[in-house]
Amino acid sequence: MNMEDEMSMEKGMSMEKGMSMEKGMSMEDSLEEVYARMGIRKEVYEYGSRVWESLQERFAKIDQVAEYNQLKVIRAMQECRVSEACLLGTTGYGYGDLGRDSLEAVYAKVFRTEDALVRPQIICGTHALALALMSNLRPGDELLSPVGKPYDTLEEVIGIRPSKGSLAEYGITYRQVDLLPDGSFDYEGIRNAIGPRTRLATIQRSKGYQTRPTLSVERIGQLIAFIKKIKPDVICMVDNCYGEFVETKEPGDVGADMVVGSLIKNPGGGLAPIGGYIAGKRECVENAAYRLTSPGLGKEVGASLGILKDFYQGLFLAPTVTASALKGAVFAANLFGGLGFQVVPDGRESRHDIIQAVTFGTAEGVVAFCQGIQAAAPVDSHVLPEAWDMPGYDAKVIMAAGAFVSGSSIELSADGPIRPPYAVYFQGGLTWPHAKAGILRALQSIVDKGLTEGVLCRKNSK
Ligand SMILES: *Cc1c(COP(=O)(O)O)cnc(C)c1O
Image (cartoon, rainbow, N blue to C red; front, side):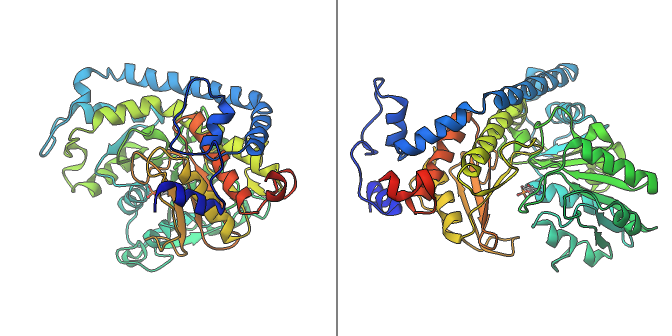
């Protein structure tokens, strides 16, 4: 099957004039025509333009945050005297790896912590979080989540769902206090849940695959202060995935003992091909380093290979890349919210991560959205994503990602577990124009499947 057949099958219609993928772009084409060639028709394009025009003030504020964070990153690199030699790598044991050690100092400055562990040997966000937990908890300790159920992949780490090598297998118990129905902290419940064995509180900033609100850094600070008042030696860890550089403050600014995340999300700026970080108190980071490598070796070993230039440059780009992703999220909230779909966060509220949830209510809507995102990707645009049983998740998940770095979710990507309420969680976009095109293409898929009403109803748009 050739690409055009596939595309027209996916849209359930015959190819229309002006939409042929074979025809190249010429300078005389209007923007609308170029969009049409990507499969985005006039009605969708014009609706998108109206939404975009209404968001100028919002976008200006996002740019201001990016400007602040860009300076923060540059200052940190200057203060750590990042030099050309830091961009080179080591091999073997990696003793005295200047670039690796300087990068960790830069992360500690950016996240306002005493120390940091930033390594390509940390495979992903889940690994970073598991490492932080397993290295700082001991048998008999209790872990507390005061913000409800943690991210899906952590269920097996903790042992909420039984798994080999979980914290539960090592005699570390777990307690959870859900957020109240209005999204606020259940302070009474948290107070009652903290006992003599409570050793670590895990606070997830982002909503992950849920429709609860994402926590602002300010609210995280209030929660940490509350926990520390009851029991000062509780280690407060923040799962910072997707939250980096969305605000001018980070959890380290408000008392977090550990701030943990993935480099193929925000802080890698799209360039880091792998990696995770743990920024925090010296002792917490040392525990993590001893667990990652070996007791006694810790941070002293771990060759950076040839990867450091991408880690540095990715961090340098991260504030503006995050801003692009954020604009995409705000745009989508207004676009889909305006058509009557439930969107979390809504089009107007303040943002604390780059994830946008859109609830379609049907598996068909989730699939159409993801296929639309895929169709607008720079890589693998010709493949049609399908739902599959992904390791670590308890329902089938469909994922759309035409990414330069496999699985990178700072690049425009969407995923949706095939289970009620049939919501899609989408994030990323290394550039705002790509985020916009992908979101419009996803809307076009939804329109083509007849899943919208009103002005963009399929009957009207034909
Ligand atoms: C992505 C994510 C994780 C896990 O990160 P992976 O890199 O996918 O393993 C954990 N917590 C949150 C909130 C996330 O968004």
